[in-house]
Image 1: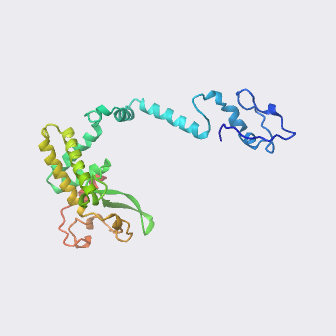
Image 2 (image 1 turned 60 degrees about the horizontal axis):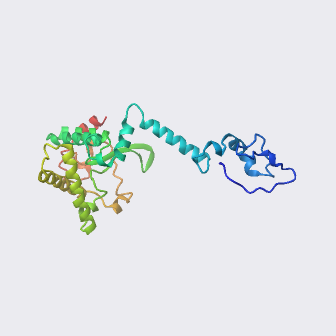
Image 3 (image 1 turned 180 degrees about the vertical axis):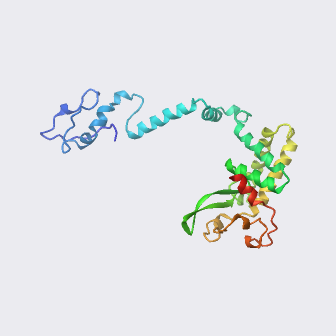
Length: 276
């Protein structure tokens, strides 16, 4: 519903004074449905929302009202006491400061958490740190989430899937296409720039940052080699691998994991304990 013009064919029972003639809105008494169906239905809205009250709009209806309300609430959120939304908005609008430590504070916080995770050499500690990152929404190494059982929807399961890549999928790492190669080169430079922002002391030279970025991309490439292709991920049977307990998941070192020569090394108990 909204304010708009309409073509009216008046009948002998229709009187023009049943609508306001000077932009002041509709009168409370609408015309009959057979005389003017549009104003018969919308009389109250038109009376309460005359266009003269909204000079900034070319029209005014329910969708414009909702959009205006959303803008008002968004402005209030930007000006709220916690400042998070406002800082995000300011960062997005101030292109010249987007690479500053202040603008990237949340990203740099994740970088520090990642550094802590990879700094451990104990398998149990690594599993626990990965779980903490997953709780923050960082899909390092793999992804985990709640999903219905595809073959029995009354059950809700912990779903573990491939993840941990900075680029969209395995083809971006393994394809020999020129465009994929160019993207990998740009991605490596992006990783190097992020490392400099995260720890300018350690990566004080371009050579150190680029070398570390190359190691990151090499690790992600090795991880990508274990990933399913996009076509394989659409195979419902191939992606349905249900385990009754985390103690026999791949990486647990048990024969029941379904992985040939599973040597173990991943502490699933420590992971799920830390995940909560």
